[in-house]
Every structure is written in C-alpha cells, then in structure tokens.
Image (tube, rainbow, N blue to C red; front, side, top):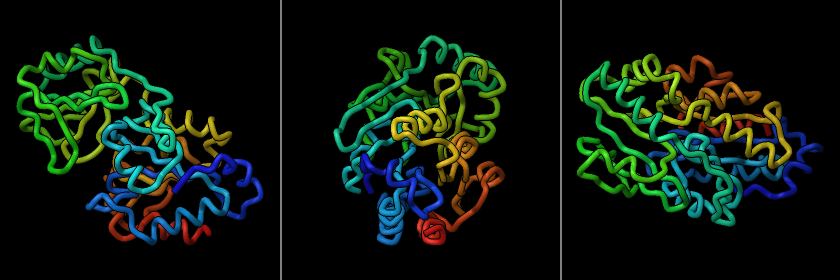
Length: 278
C-alpha cells in the first residue's frame, strides 16, 4: 500500500471513480490485532493500480503510527496526530507539524475542571520520537504502545505537545467531550478518537485540515476523495471528502453524517466498498 508519485497523473484516465482513498487506522483499516486482512490489502492494491492514491489518516501521533506503516510496507504520506503531523513513511521524515499552545491548553483544562472537577491528563509530545506522557490517574489502554508515566501533572507542559488527552472518573466520553466543547471550545479543538480518548487540539485543527494538506501535495482535491472512518474525530474528514464511509462498528455520530455504512473493520468493510467501486 504505497503512494506512487505517478498516482495523481495516472488517476485521470482511471475507471476507478476516486483518485484518493483516505483510511483511518484503528477500528477502520486495522483489525483488533492491529493487522490488515489480505482481502483489504488486495483491494487497496487494486485501487492504487487503478490510479488512486492511498493515505492513512489517524489520530495517532507518528511514534505510535510508524511501526504499523513499516509492517504494512506503506511508503507514502500519512496524516497523524489528528491532522497535526504530515509524515512521509517511505523516507521516515516528518514533513509538517503543528503544536498545541500550552498556555491555552492549560487554561482550557482549568475551565473544564471548574465545571466537572479534577481530570486525569496525558499528552503527546511533538516530533518523530515524541513520547506520550501519562499523568497520575490516567488509565492507559492495554497494548504495545509505549508511554512515560509521570508523578507530577505539571511535567506534561515542560515541552511542546501536539495534543492533550482527558479522562474523568464519572463522565462518559461523550459527556466529557460535550462539556469540554461548551466551556473551552473557543480556546482549543475537542474531539473523541476512541474509548477513553477525549483530546484537546490546536483550534481549527482536524483530520480534514491534515488530509487537505496531504492531498494538495499530490495535486488532488476533496472531490477526488473517498474516506473511511469509525469515530467522531473522522467527522471533519467526512465533511471534506466527496464520500464518507463509516464502518459498522462506528460511533453513532459518524454514522449520522456518513454517505454509506459498510461492514466492520473485522469483516473487510473497506474491501467490500472498494471491490464494488472497482
């Protein structure tokens, strides 16, 4: 699954209706064991052979993404960190990166805590080797992704970060995200990327802004794009792309704005749509 430099040129004469296939990772392209099925690999390869480019668009920052891309043999562009980072997988190079204003983030956290009480916090540091810092009380999901546990929350703000993660002991993710938008949405962006993953981002940043930047580098546009996703953080990407396809396992908010709902990530949802288009 690569992004050949000739993809944009070849797409003009292709019978495939889209020149760009944008896929989220977790819950979309990846199965629960973090692998991509042979059927989905073959469908993406066929779409690329028909002239389309494939771009991974993920909420994960580069350090939590690059090992997956390497395992897939993916050599093209990847939009990481909810749109904050544009990464060239083949060259292992960070092309662009946007950081979160830490003073604004701190103020946002204070305003949210004034409304709901103490939060558990984590943060993703900027850069190719940026660590994910976990403050006291933050619940880390099981899995192989590395984190650095801190004893003092203040250490989260000691270096540039792309985003801040929030958790609350009593509120659901939807409730926490809603409150955060109400009281701090004029300071930071707020999104939900998965179970237990409510994030604060630079204001105006989204998967759509990152994907549009990547597309421009390939000479492609929103009208050329079909996008696949499963969580509310994919809503801006669906709004930007010509067609948005939600997985069967997707959050209700994303299904509500999707042009189509396919089968789940465990049941080759991406492949089923691409095969029909091909």
